[in-house]
Length: 394
Length: 220
Image 1 (cartoon, each protein chain N blue to C red):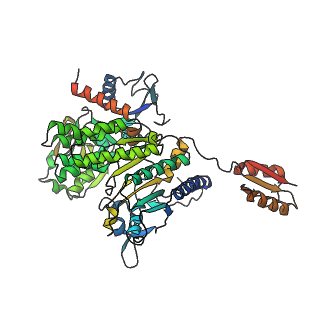
Image 2 (cartoon, rainbow over the protein chains, first blue to last red; image 1 turned 45 degrees about the horizontal axis):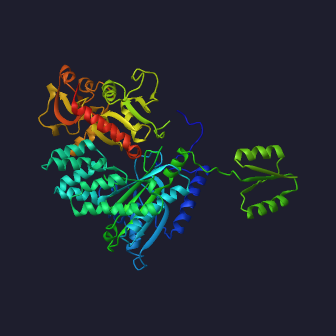
Image 3 (spheres, chains in turn brown, cyan; image 1 turned 90 degrees about the vertical axis):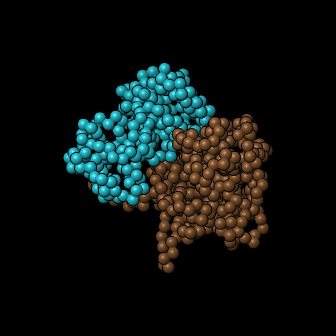
């Protein structure tokens, strides 16, 4: 195959946002930024490049192959940030450690992960999110979930669902059967990827009662509403797993107060793959998209890895995935619909500039033709560019 | 069309060996459609009454349909699933399509230990599984990807060994090959998209439980 025209390509997993796509992205980001600020979250910006060691503190090993790495001039290993929670935890544990608690921070940033690119996730993608640090209360967990739901509603998404789980529920249940460390980690991995076949094989090989086996096998299928949560107390035989259920019940009660309980379901299996979660975890799904739109949870130990123990909870929304869900559910904002294309005959440029300035000050989008055009070709141009209104001065 | 249509459950079935066994099993839990056949020219077969759609696709594409949510559910061999390494939920071992992945070499040229094959060529349809298997044993191999008649590799001098699936071992014997290492067992699995599992949980859960009951009861 011979290239007819020269297309300069970009590295694997990177993308350009063309005007319409960029406008959609900007609209979603603007909406979320003003929402975060309305809920009392202050924006922070952290560097794109960090020391590798600082990014891998919370989840060593599995993470490294997915990072873009480079060296500085002293041969220290650097990496492009792969998410925003760790850099913000670093910030909170160091430069913001004397700020009054709780800290409420937000961000809208690009992050980088080297992995197989697929729809809704390139190697570089954009996230908007918030982190709430310095509070262990269920009110803070409920606020994070409510904020994420409100964000999706405000950008215009109609059909989505939140699944909430609790890391301590699964850990507590494993504890109550005294599983050894190796079994726990194997079983957790199988539950995390919902490989039920493997999970059952592991459980069947254990020397525990038949009833214990039944309970362990049911873990990944504990999915439902309030009723399911209540019934799950039958499996929770120790303090840790009972407290996890109490915690979810309390969060649910608050989400009812926020008026968003209709979006919520519980999933008591393991939901998120990041090692640093310690309590409530959640993901948000939309029909028509095979991947979660957003996810988050409580991570009380991450900051102590940076030397300043502090409980925290947060959420990240994937901007590209939100945009994809919006287009799948056909709720895209039209671009330029109310815009005006302003053209003019010879000698009317001054008047056109004056009129454009007046319309812009009224909040309208106005593009002025940059040369004299006849009315017909100006109108054709207007249509090509997608402007809804046409003005011609002559 | 995507599995977006919330009322429908979309099931991806592989053409070939597993198709009729899968269709037969699904009938027993009431999941079927008129004209459901892998010879059908229709790409999507719908049962409007029960709100089920079937996609019949090339075997190796089934995990992809399910990972992206174009199908909610799929039936696929564990061997294909391991090779594809997709993010899907593996819900159930359906018990049929039993086989195992193994390494075989020409009988006449059998070497003493597995590691004697280090840095040799291996013909396979499963380069990822093979690489993982040898990698864990500290062996580096040259992987030659073939799409069929793998056992031809050593015969025509393309490779020293093969990694392939075996059901009965007849093909190996006919070609004077001998299995030297068992790699992993495989059988047909029910896989589910991660988001469908949450959004259509009740329906999928019911199907899984029904299938489990039928499987436990055994062949009628």
